[in-house]
Amino acid sequence: MKKLLTAASLLALTSLPGFADPVKIGMITTLSGPPGYLGEQIRDGFMLAVEAEGGKLGGVPVEVVVEDDGLKPGNGLQIADKFMNEDGIKLITGIVFSNVAGATVPEIVDNDAIYISPNAAPSSLAGADCNPNYFVVSWQNDALHEASGVAAKKLGYKTAVALAPNYQAGKDAIAGFEREFGGQVTEIFTSLDQTDFAPEMAQIRAANPDVVFQFHPGGLGITFLKQYQQAGLLGQIPMVLSEPSLDGVILGAVGDAAIGIKGTTHWAADFDNAASQEMVAAWTAKYPDRPITTYAQQSYDTAKLIASAFAKTGGVDDMDALRAALKSADFTSTRGNFAFGVNQHPVQDWYLTEVVAGAGGKPEVKTLEKLRENVGDIYAAECKM
Image 1 (spheres, rainbow, N blue to C red):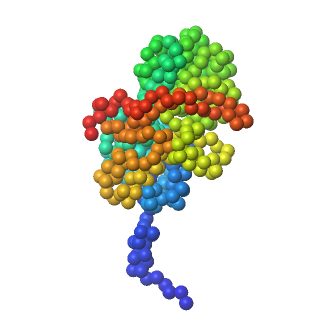
Image 2: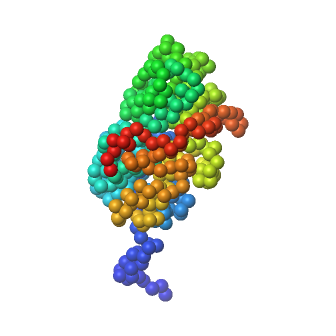
Image 3: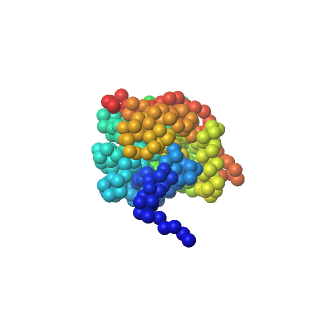
């Protein structure tokens, strides 16, 4: 005969460590429309680390609550409000785009919740408006594209046309590229919902620069590269691109036309360190038909950072201890060198890459050499924490 549990007995059982409620982690990301695969990569990269621990991070059971912002700042703000005020979530991540981050992150950190970015890192939040509750695992927007400026200069180019969407990340992209390129730059701003780049192709042809730098993430990047090829410019004017414009999904869509393009990155799938190899192997086993991108890598590292902090704090009950544990960045990054600067943005290395024909002739990114070592961002000097 089965013995029924009394209410007191059930309460005693559920208070044991094995029955503890999981810590909820909120994820606000872009899952719909042409850029939706970026959010999918962020979600799935994060969950890869969670699944490796059997549903835990740092030994702490977690529940990841995912919501689609639809690339709308108002949606991001609404989701954040729900996470914090209705669901009691104290730790949030996942935002892809800087316009969503710019509207959402201040609300999160001002409500004494912690936001950890796996991607967007606008300059507006890196300097004087830095915050103890705001951490960035990816890069600061400008620093990402400064590497491409360094590469273009190293390759001997003197004039450039630089294109990017007219929002914060696009402005940061062109500013970062110009800062390190040092040559003559013609700026062209596009829009986040643009599908026809014919006017821009005409402007590039008329300017006839030594090199083109363009930042168009997700579906925008696929469209731009295809139209650049169709306009006959790919064989005439070389490109130097940052990692968001050369992710594996873009390369798969563009095909052979991308071979030969130079790029820059903080991580590539061919990195030979053990942490990176472990992640790539796990991704390939789970998603054999999907390339892993830096979006997934950055989010995987975000989960590993949280795991390292939870291993010390046991969760989110002591927020001061959690902030300190996160800031120590006591985890092994898939990219190799990683530390937080004073503004809690990465100090890391940058590499020159080239798109080559890989297995079966499919284009893939090959790492050529290290360009910069232990680089932070210029806004850290303005941060007083």
